[in-house]
Image 1 (cartoon, one colour):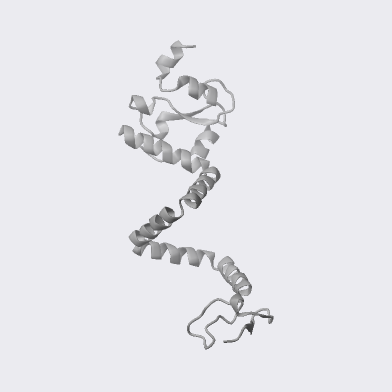
Image 2: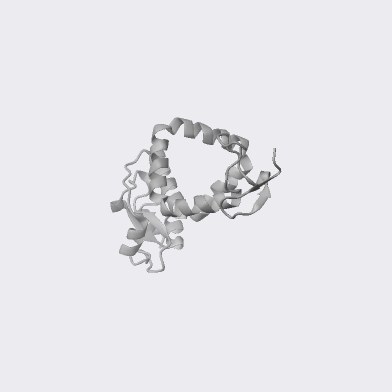
Length: 179
């Protein structure tokens, strides 16, 4: 077995270990070195991103259970990396995490839910607290979910953190007494 091989991409002679395995080839290795293959695949993916997403989505639709089982096995074997990946995703997707938590709380309380766009809600109120006119940071349920309020657009508004935490799980009438 040869110890070196010439790459068809960069034309450099490299150790055989720099080439991925390929059973169908006579020498059992790819014709491109790993770094050239990486560049070639990245370029192809950049041009065919939508096609690759469609292919992946179609595969996942057919193999949903298999994909979930594979992911569960990987997470069990790589608990620390899985925890780090989840923490990074949550940091990068704070709005999606908030929406997920709000829907989960609403399901637990068995109230009606309806999707709404947080960004549009903030824009409608000009990013201003509806109670004190400070900059708004939170979505506020007028009738709290814990008191039977629904998680729907007609029951939410925007509020600053101080007003939202001050109001807490009180109704507007209960909260108004504390002013």
